[in-house]
Image (tube, rainbow, N blue to C red):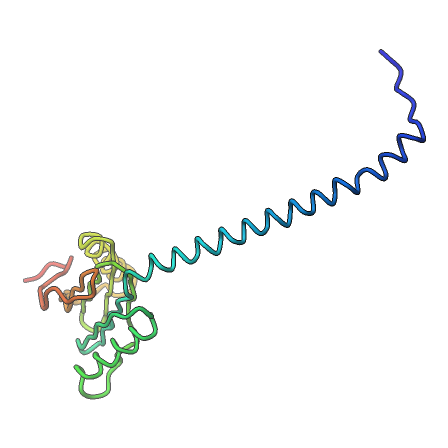
Length: 176
């Protein structure tokens, strides 16, 4: 084994002064890297906003008396306000429009009414939305309302915000 090399004073003075030069270069590299990362993030966020704006927000609201409203807009609050207004128009008198709603982008939305219980589910496909609604209905019946009335389909909305069909029976419960 060889003995350690002695440290010379001249090497210490060089090592103290030389790190300043690489630090300056490193600082410049860090600023350059930060600028590139910031620019790329800005580009990605801009592109994602442009892609997301292709699909409007669709909002479905359902009241306990069966009144419902559907609206689509590029802004979620605007769609919510329009859906609530549509529901209130359908309800006529005072109602709980807007108390239960579902907002989605590019998804199917299903609204069911089970007595006074409302189920609004969404999914990428109609089958996904129906499965989500059925799972919610089963959970509701098992945990909260064992005497849950059979559910009726109130409205189905496609991914473009158009109403597909109305008033079909839909329930996991046995019907006489």
